[in-house]
Image (tube, rainbow, N blue to C red; front, side, top):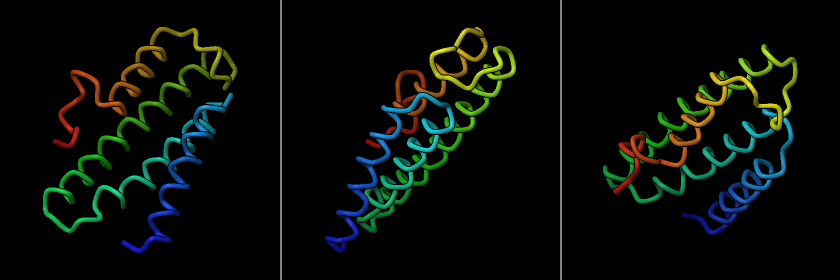
Length: 117
């Protein structure tokens, strides 16, 4: 992999993490998570081995599903509370969906089936 491309992906990874950690709005947290996803996929699949490609595809599908759950959770919360603020997570359904989405993104049990070996 080109060193400049690798540097760009690593800087994007740090940028996405910073955006996610410092956000107060659901959409900016989601955008940071998506930047992380798009930056890590080329790093996972840089070796052209079939196992690496399989891991990248699994990672992409699970991260996309978890991002969908996160957005759905934030929409339910905004519908019930009228706010898109992260600190106002009061509805139990949105809390459960958010916990599920974060567990999927982190690869926690029982959502660890996608985690690369």
